[in-house]
Image (cartoon, rainbow, N blue to C red; front, side, top):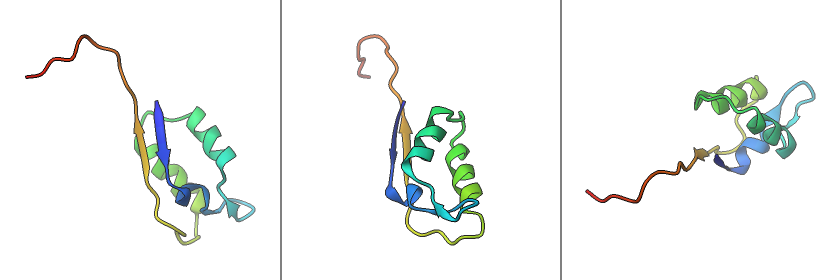
Length: 73
């Protein structure tokens, strides 16, 4: 599975210490990634808490599966 995430996610302030989310925390979250697209949104909102959103946030997740030869219809 591949993830493309803008810096708005990791730069968001929040949490107990009111610091940015950070890349290490993002990697840990992805390692335990839930199967729902709401996983990122829920995690972002949970961490942000009462803090305003600092930047735009975009997350794209995709994967490839191996299948037979490419068929064009």
